[in-house]
Every structure is written in structure tokens, then in C-alpha cells.
Image (cartoon, rainbow, N blue to C red; front, top):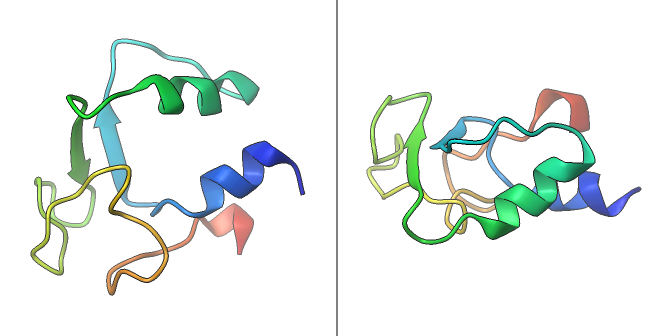
Length: 76
């Protein structure tokens, strides 16, 4: 398993963020690591800043172990 896949697999499939960049592939990991605490995140299930479990969404919070977490379909 590549480093790119393993770092992506721990984030929820419903997590989205607002960024001015449109980078895909291997460069996506580097972009996500560069996005700081000021990045705006939202959940696709609630379309808001809190997930279905009523806790805030963030790149560091929406991971395996959270009750509403869903793995990416291509990595299951």
C-alpha cells in the first residue's frame, strides 16, 4: 500500500474542504498536509460544520473511530 492511500484512508468520505487549489493524484496529499487550521470544512451528510454525531468536522477529527465515519468506497 502506498503512503498516499494509507494517509487518505483514515479520513471520512463525507468530509469536504474549501480550497483555492484543484490538485489531484499524488500532489493531493501534499496539499491536504499544507491546509492549516483555518481551512473551512463541512460534512456532505449534514451540509454543515457539524457531522451527524453533532460534533464539529475537521481534517483531524473526521477519522476512523468516529460514530459517523465512512471509509472511501475505493479503499474498503
